[in-house]
Length: 409
Image 1 (tube, rainbow, N blue to C red):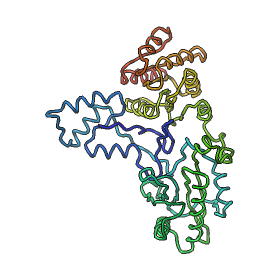
Image 2: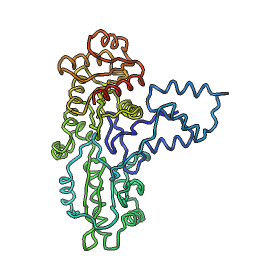
Image 3: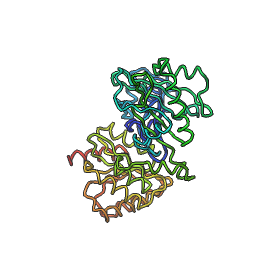
């Protein structure tokens, strides 16, 4: 039995303090679910459903579970309310990763031009879009070079190829030849490919990058030029060692979502989801936050945001989380889903009451508190006199928040 989080996570975004993200060429949550289901694994979409599911599996006849048929697997998915979604890729295989410093494209271009890499200001006339990315291969624990291309708007991940990068250089000439073939480079393009690749490698290691993604164009002479660039760098280099302060200065927060920038200052990871979401979510822990969004959508709801308060959240953090969520006019109701480990449920309850007192909350709030000091927290909520909807069961809480959101539309 398995639990997979992040089916509805925005492509490329780092989800919460845990740092979960899909890197270049890696499988996303939906792809992982398919692999597991094909192997006969029962999938659930929220930790609260694990106990029930395991009881059923262990209680099977003779404790043996034969390989399920496709019909059986469909029934198992129904039992755990998981519907595999249609995942739409946004195109580029190495999307920006927001736990890191992401610099504007214009500054990425400046870094490349400084070392002599040409920049293309016009669209590539070819039918294929070619991509060259330096990132980290988390499966093999090594930096890597990823090539890919796209035809007719399809996902470049379908054609991604990854090459190991060791000791700040391409491993051998055959690797360079393979990369040239992947990018459809002719003889006249090889020198410019070598310059681009060596420049990206120097930036990657010299500036402690996490992802350098480029879309490749060609000029009339056949030389490679960079048409698009998304560069992100490991923020830990600055936070822990004050290295690369120049990258911090390059960050342009005016192009970022204001609420996300504000949340970052309070130690909160907030990601505003697109489309017509109307349910605000306030959760502690990246995995639980992703599962909460997935499960609400599976039940027919629409989430407006992802929010991870972090394991060291305080009452003030909870209050700030409410303030940030309520800045989104789409939000019609808020779901607080807490599993207390490091985070104490009574502290969360205190933060909720503080938010009601100071923010004048007008939308309905559904609260589920489980874990450390849950009895104290639940008692505080029950005796608060506030118009809160408190639940123990996750499904009951999720269905209530969906009902309240629909009534408010």
